[in-house]
Length: 161
Image (cartoon, rainbow, N blue to C red; front, side, top):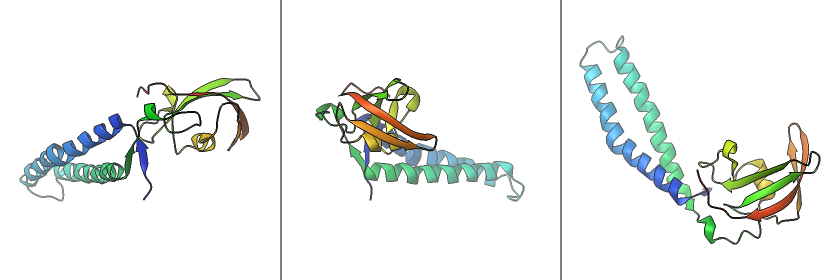
């Protein structure tokens, strides 16, 4: 079973979502199904079929969130050294070819948001970076070709999701 590293805030959010789905949402959908069933002929009952579909999606989400919580490894990146790149590290990279600088923070899959510079620890770039230090050079094989980056800086800063 592969552990899923995540921040405490994400673990708490998923736990609340799971509790809400199991207690409130399950009861709401069951009520809607009962009301739709009371309308009669189930073959042509759009309300019933829509509610059953919603129930299926909700049960799938319950399983997914339950699995994530079960595999969760809550990490507080502020307690890590960040001399070497690890979960929660913020990394400034310089593209050797274009001299373009980019900064990323390595987070869990549930926290990933590339538009905010948050990349999943499971991403190809993060996998290449893990364990490296300032001054190292890394090569990333992409479908568009090879990219070479110099690691300019490795540090910790508070992660804002």
